[in-house]
Length: 339
Image (tube, rainbow, N blue to C red; front, side):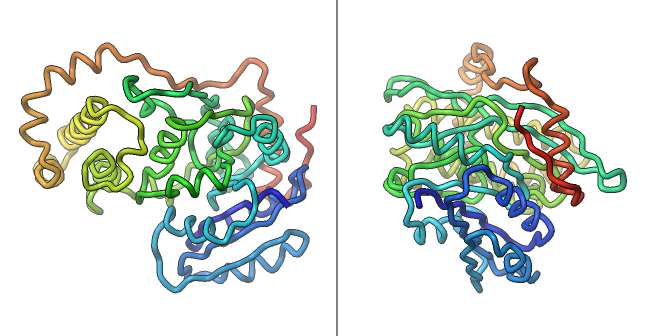
């Protein structure tokens, strides 16, 4: 057995059942699933027990440690060559595992394999889904410390889009932050090893009210901003592994200060959010650098070109993928995505 699929989860019993159903329909069958239950209050074991045709190891933990630290529990248990990360609210398309593992086998030096992302939102009252962007994978070339990474513009390193080579993921220390661990690990791996990709939809990314990215708000301390500022600081023991020049890291810090300031200024709670903004910026010693380096930041930002590619490809049969998603979500007879 060469592949382990790790699902870090907290509650979301219904979504877990759907994620496991998408694994049941994989064309590649030789894998084990590790479900890491991060102190859920829902009975997830009951869900797991219904999937007797899958090889599943279920672990319930008493302490809630968050998404990426919970994944690291599974990484320590992994004994296979490859790891597939699957968020509990996402769905894999049937040929995802087969195509990604084949791609990694054909490129033995690659640290990870990316895949395309179809974004969707469920409309349960109509038994339908809305499909949004299709994000194509971006494969960076090997970088040197003199090159600007500029990888903060890219989206297709979402964990569920990735299959990792276990030895290399473990070797650089695994995930390291609360919210943007996906960005950190992708930038770190791509600075040292080749990256490969399957340029077609690998998984369906679900928009919903309970997403970590949506619940990360100012009231909770704006964890994304704190993550970026911490990752690019000397306090991060893994700072060097990013492979990003200090000038680029400084730019990222300024950009995070600027984007959160714009959010605060455009809010109806300006005074409250400006106070929060000042707390974050001052605690990270970025107030005076932000003020004095702002002209440089604006100039550099104006010269930057977006790299994200979105929008459905002309060759993409959107209806086919939409029907498959509906078949998983609404308990219809699952269909094949083969052409």
